[in-house]
Every structure is written in structure tokens, then in C-alpha cells.
Length: 287
Image (tube, rainbow, N blue to C red):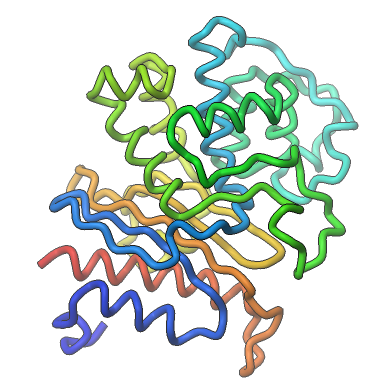
């Protein structure tokens, strides 16, 4: 980023990054040092893709806290779990492997493994997860399907998938972060101090380093969850600097073309756009 760009307000830099692309980019960014929030289409419903899994994790952890689920429960990987699955590594493994519910949640989050997602979701219901989201204030998040069908077309309707808003995802991450020190927030989320810590650490353990972390210094801690949708790419996370939470960014691209005018795959530019938004926050919020 050149000197002139650094001198611009962060909001202006973020707008320019979005305006440079022909697709839709919605985001909610919060400077955790000042509380400043910058948004673009943040309350507009958008496909969630796998960013939905953060709320699935929290609903499962509430069920653990309530005594309905046990993180040590043994789950056997059956061949049926690999049907209609296009993400993760379990689908390539030999059925019969036994893992714990804790490990299934970890796999669902750190590799976005949809075999693991099925294992977790079989112990919940769509209504339970959706109701949980509404109860904690995520009014723009609607869980509609266990796993979206592989044959879903790129121009699918919003009601064909689980949807959310950038504002909801930023709010959820803020609650998980605040629950590390706030009893009130732990009660709101329905988890213990130990489970709140597990949730945040699981987000930090994310293996996939595209989008938000892609333009940040190597080794930067980012507690995040990304998503791959038929209409775009998305990523929501907490970025750390010098060991402390620095900013939260939730960014969702939509109506992304399969191929850009110069021949670049659309998904490449959607991920690059999110990376640029994150870098603008990293540079702009440092002043």
C-alpha cells in the first residue's frame, strides 16, 4: 500500500476496494481499539456458506453445557456421512474411524470438513440451531439446510441456503471474544468459561489461511471461519496484533462471476478482495 493510500481514512479505502470489483461485497468491520465500526450492506441477507459453522459450534457447546451432549461421545465415521460432501478430508478416509464429538467440532471448524459437520448436526436440529441464533440476537441468520446440495446453481435464491449478515457474524465473534472475561456474555451464549475458551481457540486453530489472513504478516493470529459458496466467498474473524485482539472483520462477496474480464477466476478475486479489506484495516487502524 502506497503512502497516499495510507493517508486516506479507512472507510474510504474499504469503499475503493469494493468499488473496484463488479461483484457485491458486504462487510462489517470493528476496530477493537476504539470501537469504531465501518459497514457496507452489513444488514443485508447473504449466503453464509461455512461461516454458519461458528453458530453451529456455539449451539452444540450450549447443548454440552446443558448436559444434553457430551464432548467425549464417540462417533463412528460411516460411509453415509461422505454422501453429498465436497469439503474436508474425511470423505477420502476409510469408514470405521472413531472420533469424539469434540474432534468432530474441531474438524468442522479448522478444515471446514462437512463429514464432521454432519456428525455434529446429527446431534442437533435445524430448528434448535436457528432458534439459538435468534435467542442471542442474530436476527439476520437463518439456518435452512444441513448441507447444501452439490448441484446447487450459481444463481440460486437466498432461500435455497442458510443465510446470514455481516453484522450478525461480527456480533457473534464479539460475543465469543467478550465471553472470555464476561460472565454475562457466557450466560447469554449458554456456555461455561472453559467452553468459551475452547470456542475461541478452535477459531484460532483455523488451517485455511486465505482471505482475511492472506495479506497480513506471516504468523498473525486470526480466529476465523471462511466459506465457499456458489455465489461467492466469505470470511469472518478476529485479527490479533501484539498478542491482543485488534479488529473484527466479516466480509461476504456475492454475485461473483465465474471468470473475470481478464480471465482470472472470480473466486480468486473475491478472496483477494477480502484480503485487501483486511490489510486496509491492519494499516489504517494502526495510526
